Image (tube, rainbow, N blue to C red; front, top):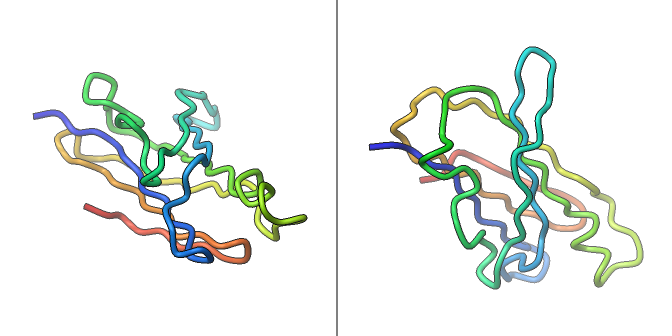
Length: 114
């Protein structure tokens, strides 16, 4: 069994999924930062497919960048938050790594989900 990476973004200010938020994934290696993929959340606040699918899933250090500022700019003049980088490690190539984001224009929270 091979693992994969997913996310789920919830807009806690509106109480709804954060539909239409752009998310970038980077691989981090010895100071280098390689862009792997850009995805956009759907109406449920999730991406339509895994951000890092099973065939590309490897151990290492990664960074998800959630473009919260652009997302909130659709309804706010200025958002306190802009891009939100979340750096994390993958050490079990057989696991499902889920990185949820709870976000408002003024704060965010994340954790390793299931």
